[in-house]
Length: 350
Image (cartoon, rainbow, N blue to C red; front, side, top):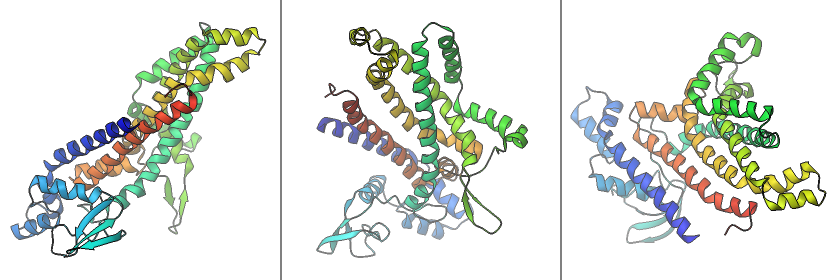
């Protein structure tokens, strides 16, 4: 377990370093996007000093990484480089020694270059839409994919199996953004008068009085577009895993004892065939969080994807780095959780 934690921490640290170094290349463009091309040198210098862009690269890295840590040391002097009022705003001072204090706080991601708002608040506001979209798509793909995969295994080499294999192969070959465009065009535009669906719209909508309401129907087409590929892959993985499990000796023994076929399939075979399927589901959940970016843009969902792409186009490096770190943390958390899921499914796994 210790080696696993060390490995995942190293991966997260490596991702952070690569992202930080890559985004420093566009730091000059970030200043120009805030103040414009015709700004004077004094304004440019003031902005660079405010965001520490006048400091060497290693010091900017140290300052940013220091702000991310839950335990950080900050100077009490407001003119000191290591003083950050935003980072310690909601923290708790633990001890003070020689003008420096140890603070317990949440990770601080900085402020957006474009609107000066806290990056963490911007990300959290948009992440809820992306997370809900991903969860619904993954639940739909997992539940239906496992059910169809079991059905294909039961009817192995018969017409239901052949039909399921053909459709799932087509689903695997279709990219999510291409499926999203087709669904938006057909059901959200040409047939919108019959389906009642729209090819664009956010999760939260406002009426003429400014009152917010939850619009579930705007999730239907994005969820279908996002879940098609994982649905096809989970279906085929479940089918193949079930076929291998149904050949095991304990399955024949259970059948010889007089147990009904549905009980043997769902109580004995399925639970032992789920390990590779769960691994695929976990991997796809992390991928969908990143893949939802394109779907959100197609359907104008105004989630984390649209926020990140817009920030990237405007060289808003703190916002891009914060959103990318969130996706990386999700991957690491999912990978770490897989170990416990495997042990729950199969006690033989250590």
